[in-house]
Image 1 (spheres, rainbow, N blue to C red):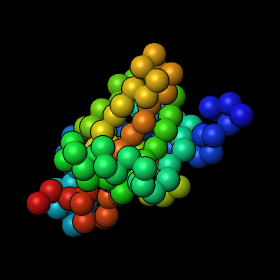
Image 2 (cartoon, rainbow, N blue to C red; image 1 turned 135 degrees about the vertical axis):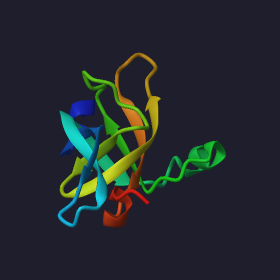
Image 3 (cartoon, rainbow, N blue to C red; image 1 turned 60 degrees about the horizontal axis):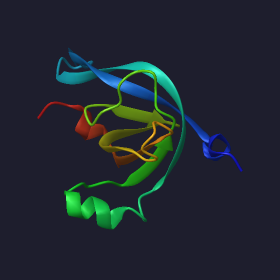
Image 4 (tube, rainbow, N blue to C red; image 1 turned 90 degrees about the vertical axis):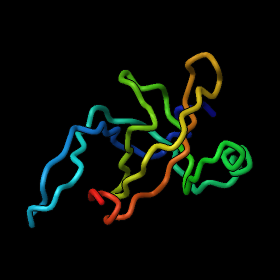
Length: 114
């Protein structure tokens, strides 16, 4: 089985594009799609100990090929209507083969400025 055959979902990589306002005039963060990614996203289980040691709070883990644009902890990923903040990015194989990501699911309230 190849690595690419394990990537069973398609998502979007989002970069922060600035601030805007919602329908009620309230400030909101604006994100723009910069690339489409083949992904595997699953609930975070196996890496929890490593992430706890690093102080990372993640709800999901994901795997993907390295995108053609930067992917950092300042970014978001959307997949099938769910938005995730990127919490941690690891070059898994050490040779740019693929990335392992720690993700935190974002609730609607989290998209607004507080």
